[in-house]
Amino acid sequence: MSVQPASRPAPPRRSIALPIGILAFLGVTAWAGIAIEFNPIEIVEGIGGADRIVGAMLDPNWAFLPNTAQPMLETFQMAVIATAIGCAVALPLAFLASRVTSLNRIVYALDRSILNLIRAIPDILYALVFVSAVSIGPLAGILALILFNIGVVAKLLSETVDGVDTGPIEAARAGGAGRIQTVGSSVLPQVMPNYVAYSLYTFELNIRASTVIGIVGAGGIGNVLNTQLKFFDYSNVSVVIIELFVFVFVIEFISIALRRRLV
Image (tube, rainbow, N blue to C red):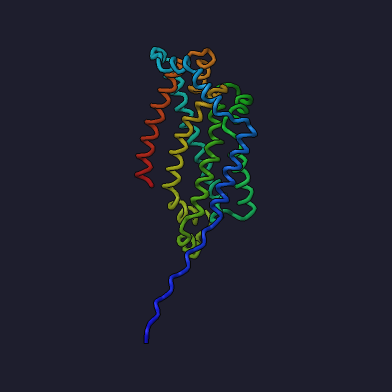
């Protein structure tokens, strides 16, 4: 009795979703470029007219460096305070914004809506509001960064809580633990390394953000940068940019090393 060879399975049909998605992306990109009158030629012409600025920035005025020491220290202090307060407030909000640990659906929806609103407003707009409320200075910048930190850390941490192992939670509830005890003993230890990593990442962002919000009068090195730009003193601007680059690079290097030990 002869055995017939098994027939080869039919090759899978190619999905048309990918080509359609690519065409849709290209179409939306073309529509956006036409709507805003995007012209690459103007970019090339603009770069050609920036010789004077680039030349000045390639010749930093290092004598200006001592004038940036105090504002840079103020920027660092703003970032430290905002990170500490913002991340502390974000911790309970993150638990309330997670389906795993939220009190109920109403609290979950309300908390998520508030966090979405906080993230929707840019940090520089917060700075403008607080400068008007509490006057020019680092306090306005700290308040703006605190809200910025709450939005970022609470969002990231709530998604981390959604993915925790539910086994310890069920065991804690079966043992008669209350809601707060369950979160503290079963959920918090699982997400703590991520929480620390998010806090360090936010601290890095605060250094960059404090520079931007300082331009509108919220304290820090941003005030110095804005003043030098107004006077078109690009040699001094170059010094500030180089100092910021070195400062952020060192902080990021330290943060990466800490996150590797924690996560």
